[in-house]
Length: 306
Image 1 (cartoon, rainbow, N blue to C red):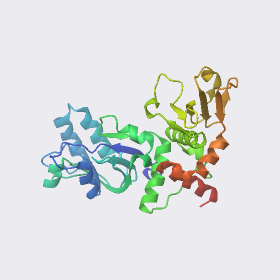
Image 2: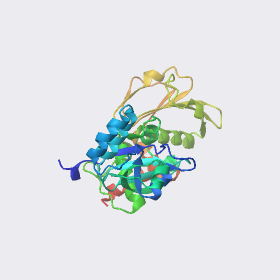
Image 3: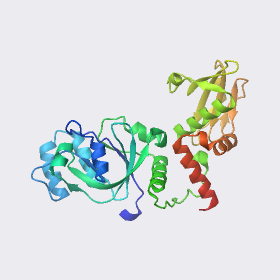
Image 4: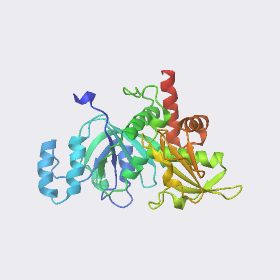
């Protein structure tokens, strides 16, 4: 397999080097169509091998150096996609355009950006347009990280093509795509939460989301009569066992994207059919977060054969 046929890798980078006060490294890189890290060398190296040898001697005590430098110099391929965000929380998606070079100009020194790759950036905006796995990947303090999520990688290719006007060809196996199979676990939770709030006229309590000790994802209460509702969602082919929610204090709404429900029916359990949710998503696209709206357009285009 040649580099040209390798799948696109997805990265994220925290552009927060030791730049001088008042310099936003993310804005610096985006304005110059580059992505980069610090750890400069003087005199400037002219080859990857020269930088790696001298850099290892100078920065050998820092594991963060080796991981970030290895990614920028060796692991990133031309055509890979990379996410970043600036200090205001605005997200950008870039495409690696060329090989490594080392910069030592005064403005690069001030920004603490030395090892760079040419990169074509597109502004994405708020986090509702960003895959959940990408947002979560910014939590670790590491400078550069690979995002190992095929769904996020496919979505990022679709998004970058849409933002830059570049045609996007779906990879094999993604033609006539099913919207429910395209959405990530976090996306499906959003869909189900919107469904409940629209069809049951209820409000969600954000503080109850993702409480690990609970059997449900989050809690709701209906506006008309104050009923307590719970929601559980499973993506992929994972089933849901209704027996696990028999003692839930309220009505438990269960959504398995696979349509697989185990156990016995219970009066306080409502199993949502995939077809019901699929129709709801497609008929209420304007209510969905930006990333789900893009998935909808993609799914519809594959069914049209365009």
